[in-house]
Length: 257
Image 1 (cartoon, one colour):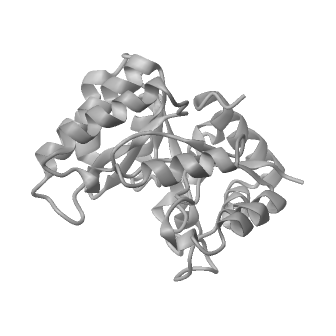
Image 2 (cartoon, rainbow, N blue to C red):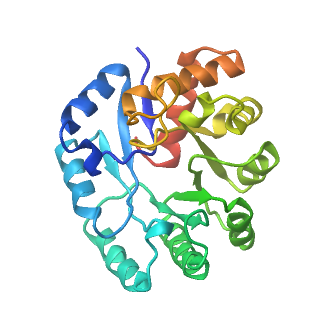
């Protein structure tokens, strides 16, 4: 029986309102024993914390502001989020980053919010969970001044090529690998093959980005072994080895043990 960690899942969202407990129990049965919950905005905080209370030791929250949720009042939102660290345990900062897919007009605000959360990561020695969509170079530009600062974290659903992957790992970042690795002609598959296994983390981003053969459906944490199996096949190793190494990396990065 393998034991793996879903390092990025949104189980607190409304897509799971009718069967959340069943989804979690089925995932645990399938070998997924921990679920790391990145926050989105100020409306998702309470559902996320409630889920963490209901499944202690399994559902573990983070705190941050998603780039697509950066609105004109983002500084006030971040101030409120910052106070929550005084009374709650979070395993990481995020998810934060830059998203230029939906709206490029908020780029400056996204960058400023990103910088604020990077400073949280350094101050509290917590890993930074970075969302990047149509923005890998912009993310790199923000991170360059932080080289050798001790900043660490994960590029969630890593969207870049192998050159960019090596750049991020040289900065101390891991790469989140999810269902996209199972898609035909996926760049992520090349990354999963060429980057050392110690830098890879498993994630679903549930309810989004389900692996083949479940594309078009709601993603579930119980599908994560399909991602592990794909990485194992790409690398020519056992799924047990993928599970062992990625779980160890997650435990170390997010201080889970």
